[in-house]
Amino acid sequence: MANINYASHEVNTKIVYYGPGLGGKTTNLRFLYSQLAPTIKGKMLSLATELDQTLFFDFLPVDLGSVRGYKLRFHLYTVPGQVFYNASRKLVLKGVDGVVFVADSQKERLDETIESFENLIDNLRDYKRKLDDIPTIMQYNKRDLPNILTIAEMEKKLNRMHLPYYESVAIRGVNVYETLRELAKLTLGKIEITKIV
Image (cartoon, rainbow, N blue to C red):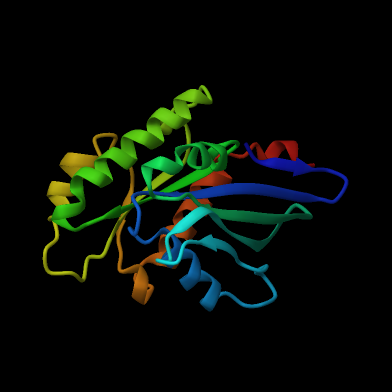
């Protein structure tokens, strides 16, 4: 849930990039970090293995202007994709305001992607939250590879809730910023702006 700090005039929101290992979560954050102006981004923190897989989480703070005199801060996190890091996944989800589910479009990664999506739902349930109550965008990543599922197949297998989606190639930045911009808009729409006086 967004944290409104009346003393410092800040609204802090938490966005979590969730999905299977090596699906493109960290690549999303790295692209954003490379493109955002130094004046609006903080330092990107990352704890990865030798194979460049996220071990605990990645973190990137971003300032997105102000509303009614309150500075808007988005804290972008990724979760580790590997199942055996589920405790870390769950911890990073605590207090989430918005989710980007980064789905790997490769046919051979479908089972792992479905498992990760179901894991997201299970972990939210442990916090007594439902995915349909949290602004969420599906990002179908790696659309440039040859052995991928069609969007219709991905929608049928993963998106029964009819969440908004973007096709992306995170390594080249295709629809990375657009995904975040749309999720930011949805997330801010959920914050009770009337509390900001």
